[in-house]
Amino acid sequence: MPRFTSMRILLSVSCLVACVSTRVLAQDNGVEQVANWQAYLEDHSDTSKYRLVFEWDHIHDATIFVDGVDGGRVYNAEDDERCNGDSSIVASDGQPYWMPRFFPRPVSAEITAITGVKFASADWQPCGHKEITICHAESHYDFHMYYEDEETMNSLPLCEIGVPSNPDLPVCRDSATSEINHDYFRLVNHSIPLTMSISRSAMETADATTLLDGVQKNFCVDASSAILRSGVHYGDASETLDEWKNPVTIIGSHNCELKFFEPMFSWKWASGCVTESETSWPVFEVANIEYTKKGIESLPDSWKIEVSEACKAQSCLPGQMDPPLSEVCHIKLSAEGTKCPPEGCTLLKECGNINDCSTALPYLSPWTDNDKDNVDNTVNETTSTPVITETVEPEPTSPLAVTEEVTTSSDAAVLVNGANSLLLVALTFMAFLY
Image (cartoon, rainbow, N blue to C red; front, side):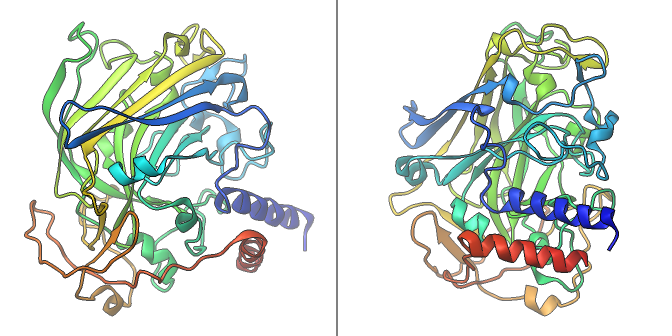
């Protein structure tokens, strides 16, 4: 076997294992990018509602950035060769620049009982997502609030990964024959935002609490965004493709079930390098989210991101962003919604369809065994103990009609742990590459 091929396989296996085994890729070098983590509940004026708050310090020196030629920060990481899928250049943490950095963090049992959130992950994308349709290729945070525990997410079977421009990227593609891959494309049309209120730009108002109401959203599924052991992503393509001005709302699913709610914000926004005519900084708010229907009772109705003045870049020159004014940038993200009932929130498992972001037409899967997608009952899984409930046929609340419902057993998850899991991942991926 040629040396290059051998090195490529070793790099692929090491990247894949680091990415999917324990979600601690970026936590092994002492000083962490996501430091002084806090997750807590605040009192809400409405006792039926919760306010969930996350805070952390963004440590700039511990962050993997794509530096410009002169040491500045490039606006669009797509312009740098280190973000190419065929690049073998590694960053200071030993991983390719294009590999996501994961920072999973725990939440308390009280938070789970009240909000349904089982863990959070402040994930960092040094190169952005130039291979993903609805994401702009620039450094940003993907803040995932997961409604499954970390062990369950890490135990999802290994799919066949890769995209045409990068065979090592931990992305699952839909398949005509691989059910593991196709599970990411058993889609939902619940939990889809239809309208929301968002912050006005600083040029429009000096009051950061003033919102633009009734903003229509046109969510679609991005078939290029099915991240291994996370889920496929849904968003409004217009928010990210025409440059990236504001923080945005994303949701994700796997196998007909909501898996996460995701505020996403670029480092350009956090650095204060988006002009005042285009955004609100250092606070941006999303409120009054109206959904097709909720896939979990506690799905946030609103969220807000705040950054400290220390996050502001020393200068925002065209084509680059300088480091922030201070080494420690403080970030605070909050979400509000309806509290879970005393018996715990339930995750609705219900298949549907939605437009494909790349075609603006209903998503068309290559999957051929449609019989496996046509099971009659709905399973509700609580955020504490899974239970099967009586199925009630829901009336569609939008033009996104329900197309199918499926049922599974609560003990159907495959748990793969410890060293055996790592060995299985490595051997499977080696066999795939050969």
